[in-house]
Image (cartoon, rainbow, N blue to C red; front, side, top):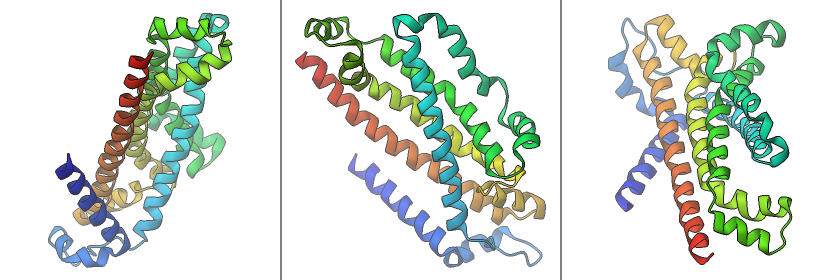
Length: 248
């Protein structure tokens, strides 16, 4: 466990060092260039990376709010009949590839960040919705009966019992959605959004493998670090949830 943490911290430190001072790593990237091509992407990788992360975060937060709300709605007695409709809404992003969503969104939203956010938002709904639905429908009956026996209202049970117990499962969906969005956000550069995709596209256009490596490796490292970080939080919450269930 400690070795894994040390390795992740080293990788994070190297990533930060590269983003802050990519010129330091130029000797490592020069072998991947030819005909006098630059080894380091000319724009600020820090700005591009922060923009990429911001777009991913905004899309994930919006997807989380909508998906969790839909799952809560359909697990209440008055909203059970909306389950098929809610599932269809959550499946939209998986039915239409992000590229297709971008093509449909650009005419109305224009180029830039907006169509990218729409594509990522729709693509991220399903994992969060399904995990939230699973978390809320697999709660221990004994715990729910105890909550009712204490005189809790439906709202109180939801806030104080159901969501806290289902949180680890919900976070698992958010983790998956975040990593998917982080990787998928690269296509946003095809419609002029500021993401790491522009570094990759520049590498493809100029046949510059060094650019391809910079964009691809940064996205991959970010995805692994964020996935591991959220998995760690999920494990902590799972341990706490198991403790609460045993006490109950």
